[in-house]
Length: 233
Image 1 (cartoon, rainbow, N blue to C red):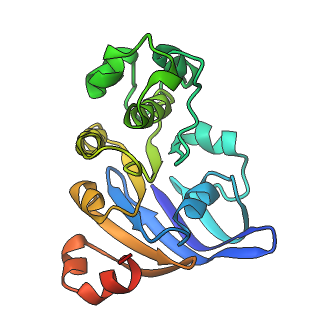
Image 2: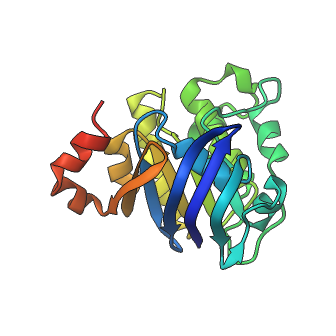
């Protein structure tokens, strides 16, 4: 579904990513783990064409997308849920969702308001509320739901559990499980190891813009020095 190889990215003169490589298969949830500033968000933004990439390859469904415009990448079938959420505070929940609506895509599940409200019952209860009236967790749910209205095949989730209540984190885990059950692939950027473990098939660890480890969580548990070196606060 997604293959990244030898990716280098910069912010101005700052070299942020150095030779990053990862892959996400069909109907797979992959976690990208690392501390703050490790390069997780920059990797996501690079895939979406939001950061200048200087070298490397980003292939989606076998097609090279590095260097393409963000809207072209989105239309190809990749949905992006940014860490900042970026909902429209002066629009209602329903209006926020309508902004994200796209035509059905072959090979991808088609998301309707009714389908999304079953997945996010909190949003159905507040469908007439303005975005700015929602809690942080509800805003995160709305951002994910709006992305799904574009009917993507692959979703990039950047720090979905950050700053939200534990009960909402558990709900978010169920949502990701449902997305996988619907046939979507997910690349998940996370610091919360417990949350990532609940929903992911395998993981990569990034540190200072370079990939340091990849494998299953069972393999990670068998190497406590890896977690201590790259994930401990």
